[in-house]
Image (cartoon, one colour):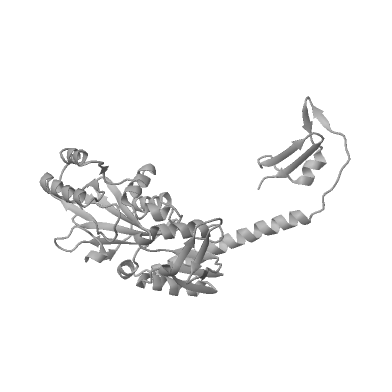
Length: 353
């Protein structure tokens, strides 16, 4: 089977690509910056000016700068090969507002979050909440675009600056965890690795990129369930879910479509890249075999001779009752959907696939 990794070429991507080569017969490493999408009838994808090859599996990842490109690529290619991330997830995952709306719709526990359309509405919220409070820009990764205000005055000042720069923002309750959060790496329907991240002194963001330290942990069943439900809600079979362990239970703060693997691999001693590559291979193989089975079934159905039978129809009132041997010959089951095509003097009955 053939696989391709579309990425920005980070160390984590290199690890994943090296692991892919152990499972797939052929593997290509594709630079996302060299891809083009021609949006028209059918859609065409070009790599370095030439049509992209066909693959059994494509794992596409990248930063928020490429969200629209990744969504376009996935929309087109997911019809012909296995891709672990749903097209809409690239928009959701790179916009914190869309993320929170999606999590809310799925009933995922998270800190209270507010969206204000005007400065007046935002200041009204400031008077009704407890401090400190978190202000977030919708776009941003690795903790960037996240600010902490410890009073109404400082929050109001930040809002004035954001409005001056014409930046949209979210207001979110601050959950005290001592600068600690949990990152769960979800692959399929399992948490394959998890670590507790602790922020450096004076820093509230528990991101490895912001200097936080990681420690491998085993999650309790409730937190695992929340992480897996989050991944399923946002349409990602592979992603990282960041969780706060609060007095009210686990609370999701965000998910990451393209998580770094260095920190969690070092902290947990789990070869996460290998877990991802193996899962991709298994799912791609399952899809290919399923497609082959459907094709063979269709071919056999077309090859089977059609038997013509001359008989009288058995009516029950105004309804036609088919002879018993016809029911046996077709192999129709009572709970199986069928398609009826009928006009005067003609009736065709086919199994619905």
